Amino acid sequence: MPGPKPLDPSSSPRAMLGAELRHKREEAGLTQEELGRPLFVSGSFIGQLESGTRRMQMEYAVKFDEILGTDGYFARNCEAATKSKYPDHFAEAAEAEAMATAIREYAPLLIPGLLQTEGYARAMFRAGHPTATETVVNELVASRLERAHLLEKPTTPLLWAVMDEAVLRRPVGGAAVMAEALKHIADLGRSHRIIVQILPFAVGGHMALGGPLKLMAFEDAPPLTYLQGLGTGRLLDDPATVAHYALTYDLVGASALAPQDSLALIESVAEAYLHEDQP
Image 1: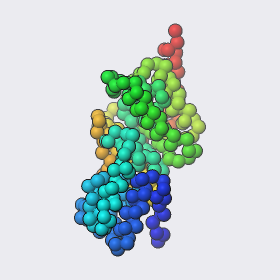
Image 2 (image 1 turned 135 degrees about the vertical axis):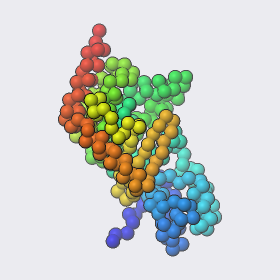
Image 3 (image 1 turned 90 degrees about the horizontal axis):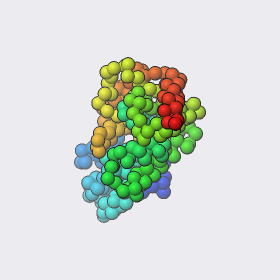
Image 4 (image 1 turned 60 degrees about the vertical axis):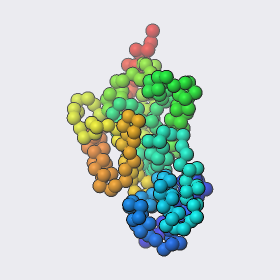
């Protein structure tokens, strides 16, 4: 059986901590399961920390220093590794997203962040932060657009988005913004960079009525599920839980329009917005 994939500690502070954690664990003769036991976490969770897929929290850093006798190394370096431009509830998910080989997302109300245009993101953040300064909104928009650079790679990550028809019909930012945003999605789909499906209103009830859902797969770490609410978010790694939400996504996708029919609908709605914006 091949050994664990070599880590590149220079790629990020999180990867540096992960590489050192693996080194010190192996030096101590502990398995991932044995190191995770006193922290009440799974061996796979330790593996995700070592691979840099998940960020190290201070409470874990302190325990690692105690167990591995590292004289405060992990606690000292944890703060720098956990700084993020994203809100606390989304920071870990955004970092995992950047390392994923495949992302599957169900979006019930808004265009997924990775697919948003600047105009759409600005209108969304302005509506969500009505009293924020322009500087704050500009920073939020910049962070959102920076995430979309993931799609500049020709094939990875695989992005498969299922959007509710409500996403198309809610005119965030007005007709012109929506026409541009939907054309952007259609262009990505027509160029075979993403897979996109629309779940029509006619489907009625389905398993994901509770809210948005994101599934992420990785080359050398177990899959993760991210569930987001209003100002909250949870990143889950329990295998049974991830499997449940993977089934949820599969059933939603099975009820959605085929990709070609979805692109045709997206382009049709974009055209309608464009005509609506004409004088």
